[in-house]
Image (cartoon, rainbow, N blue to C red; front, side, top):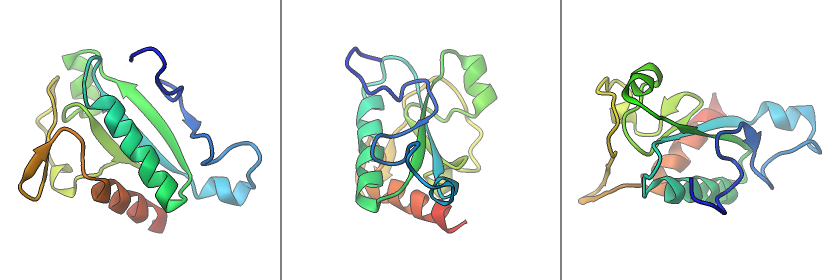
Length: 136
């Protein structure tokens, strides 16, 4: 992770402005858990984190954001790493079509948004996954 990066790296905590000690227990119960899995040096890691933060801000959603660095192929297999970056909301990949996938490893992940392929999932996918988790 580059210097000056957000302090959410490798730590479970609520994002500033999206939860904290001042909240009521009921508000904390509504918090979803978002995992951003990545490998060191991934150019799409920070843009993915920023996209998650922006969607949470727009939705006014509470979320525990955990950035998980996957360091090797064995860990990739163990955690079900589909490539960097991967985003899970309450344990579910944000890309429904990828949920049954079992091709794990140390690779870049791309997302197809219409006819455009990119290294960061579309905000709409993140939003839909957060909304789905909040309904559960």
